[in-house]
Image 1 (cartoon, rainbow, N blue to C red):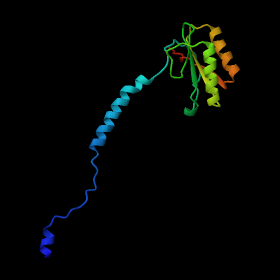
Image 2: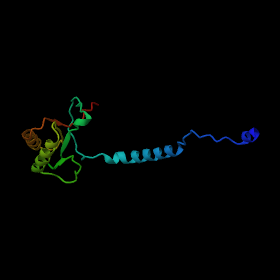
Image 3: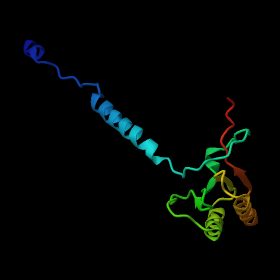
Image 4: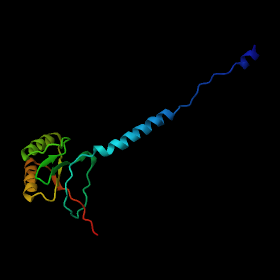
Length: 145
């Protein structure tokens, strides 16, 4: 009787995981993210003035609001819909709503170098009136040849 039991193949549990399908899925996701990441960049193309200044150290949780002034004097705000230009009154209303949601708000002005100084100052005055904690200007670094 013992002889018959020995001839039976023993069934053991397989303790291995086949990771090949997971690697395939990971590679497909990697390709998708590599293709879509450059498309997620938002913003308008403006010709920034050059200045030599130290970059700001911005914490990820304190991401600033960016207001763009295009070369024609149009205002845009980076709230997701940057296809339509806004008036200063629209900018004021949107910034008020954002200030109600976030205690500390910093705003960066992304102004084209051909924009009049009056447009930039008008925007800065409205931001100060609303109580924006800090306002900065975005510039291109000076390139020394």
